[in-house]
Length: 397
Image (cartoon, rainbow, N blue to C red):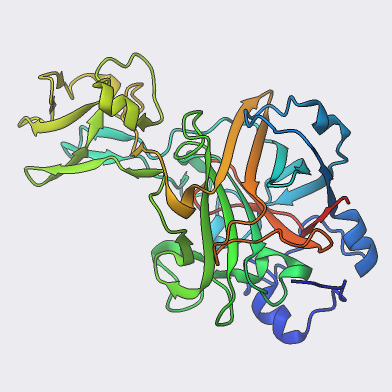
């Protein structure tokens, strides 16, 4: 992908079809307002990876001394104010990113502000009104005046997107070239649809997707390796997981025609946001094997989860998570990552091989090249994310 710096004056076709998350509202993808001439834009947004001779510990705190020697690239990210992101629009985040590399790997350190620690992703609860188990909604709830009366229940996430193949406009705009909102037939009921797919056959974007509940809860040490291509579906657009086992599975089973949690931790004394495969194997998490007439759950060890207990009703402190986690493998497990949260700051430390060989991945195989990347910040959100203008990675020689 050898490139030279090109003008940021995109053709009218690219402006119409590629420059932002909301084609109807004219969002142009440069949300932090730094629309400078091309050379200044690249200079301001360039991150230089420092060469290292030693290995790095991926622990999520960036404690290695070499990080202090790396000049960061700063970014400001804003959530576009579009219907699909209702309840999140115009939220702003500031952060920085650093990079180091050795003969085999690239390492990246992201730090950004987030005022809330969000990992309680769509938990189960017993709804006394319907007499059924159900999920909390990922979407905020609003009153007739449009004010949020109940927050959404989801997780914090970070995404980093690169070109796995050349993608028209990406070098100038970043991953906004693949954002699509409200385009028939993809507009879903309630305007919740916000799909991502590339615009031309053969275009593939590599997506590093850190999900703080599903893959980053301090157990998996892995960042979900995914990609986006031109083959859009009504549900996921062009987003796909790389080949291999994913980090998580739905914590749902069906008993007597009712959907219920698949696993529960009966000895829990506080809210838990994930169940791991190790907890299942050890018996700490028990499978639900039967359902009583009132909706109470019978576990494999004979324990009964009594739904008359408010701890399992709405806003209860023991509501089971909607997913259980497992160890990923294959190409989907290519990226090692760990995160820590403290003082209103997420710190995410990442390691990936410079060259993976996967056609769905960016290959850092030319240390003289410049690699564009986009950043997405999800604050307790399924799809609503903040974006900054494109950033550029170079390797110090």
